[in-house]
Figure (spheres, rainbow, N blue to C red):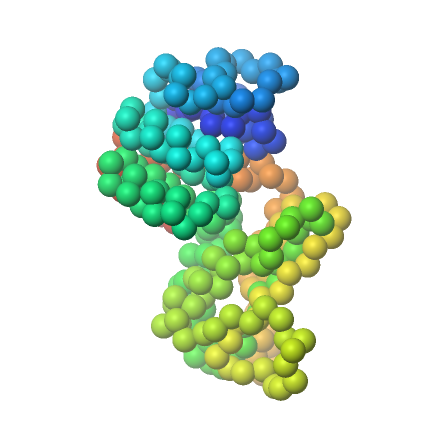
Length: 251
């Protein structure tokens, strides 16, 4: 049994993970952290993680960037591994995460979905073959109209996985409108679509002469990120100090 502290338990993802954990016999959420009230949980909830006195095997974080510093302090003090799912961390905070990984096991990924991370692995293993054969590479990502950042972190992670397998010879192009020229061979085009309630849709397109190969992932609900976070918490139990990501989980 993996005992989990849910950091940000009353948020949308916190509640999703709480529901998924109830359906998983191998995990139990033993405590939650959230300053906002109004939701009744089946485990004790603390407004600040400093107040938490419940022992756990891992912390899953889906809270806010402002709360990450205190979270890292707690995890280092208690020697508890942490799965960091909060986005928008500053460069200084990311450096702090790196430092924390010297004292505890830290897992952080651009996307917690098992499917997306398998796609990243597939691209790392196969992109060079298509690139060396002269295929042009374009990435199209689609998300709901409320998403503010573009392109998505996942789209960039996909581009990075392709680029890494091809000796990092590509540059990224996000907007072709200022340019009036043919597409260059040393670029990856990344386009963003925003509309409706699209949870997440990513296509990595390899366009060659007379043929197109497309690798796709579609998210139909945010539950996939919760399932990935729970899988990460299971992975972290008893792990040595270090910096991990979801690629380590799916090996």
